[in-house]
Length: 377
Image (cartoon, one colour):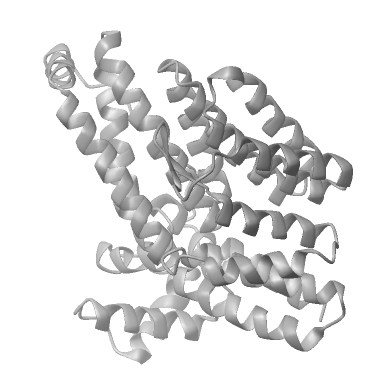
């Protein structure tokens, strides 16, 4: 068994082996689980990482939500292949018959489960949901794999597109880059089968962030623009605003300030008025003028614009407390804005707040940004 998986997940969070031992103990205390003594856990962690001891399911069930990884990632194994078809005609027909019985009420149950996972992710972070998300996606893929006729497949494909895109964003947040990319590809395929251009455009827009984070912002700009073109007139105004704001952010990182400002103008012009935050046609989109103000400030901070500061502080006051990850991002934005003005004390204060929130959600992606900004102090 490879040792790379556990070590990679631990170091991505900046944890020492000793810190991992403490986190295992704290997790066990919170969930009323029995674990070995501190001395034994130190030995276990060392042996797990050196390949001398297999990670049992008992400890795997703790490490997966603690580190936000799947079993293959935890054990350093290759990504699993696509699910195999059932063995034998009887088993195949049984699964096909089960898929035919997927009713609208069951599809709604799938969608409700996605919404619950989205809410938990927003409040608690992605790491603790890895087992639930993996099971949810598996159930949806099973239903779609064995559904035969279009009237059954389409609603399941829509549900899978939404769930896969959420799972991809959670994986990106947890630092599982390959898993994120594969989930985005799954979401795009499902959206294409369902003829759901809004779901396709949203998956492409989010996938652009993987490229941007990987150091390919120019390619990310092309992808988010392609998403807008693919959606065309079938995009809702709120999703069009979301994609334009994403384009503005990525253009700023790619060094295209004029394009970034133009995209911001389009986002502001496209967004419907009022206090509503959810898109009735695309529930994964949370965006009103308060959210866009935060995004606007983020882009201006990236461009080194002095106007960013006021916008960001206004957005911080208006932030919904349940959007923990977004609040961590705001503190990062403010730290960046203060760094541009060489106000290092204020920058440190915001990075400290951002780190506390990122630790609360287990966000590797946020932590990486915090570390990059900290290096500039």
